[in-house]
Length: 126
Image 1: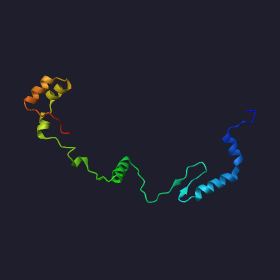
Image 2: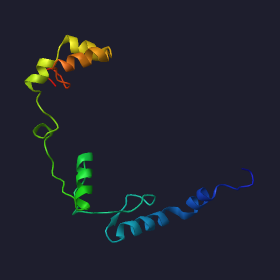
Image 3: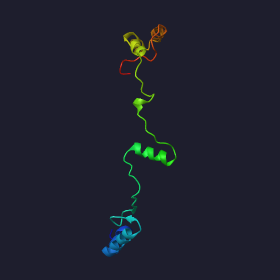
């Protein structure tokens, strides 16, 4: 503006000069265990003894271990979560049962189940 009332940050920055910026940078780099590339950066501590977490699984594992819980990883294919279909399940899977389920025909589905079809019928892929 014409009255010379610039913003305080711009007038302070112009008054500080390059020697002040050099002094601020030296203060940031000489602090114990901290580094910074410019005066505006926040100093960060170097931690050489900690592993960098690179995935959500590693983060979750480190949180569990940090709280004293075991963080053993298990393969889902070898656990009870994934089971191969039984012969009864694959034999029960067919057009009539699939049609009854997809059309929400509860009477037909109950009739097929009463005849001995497995309620968890599926094909060879599960």
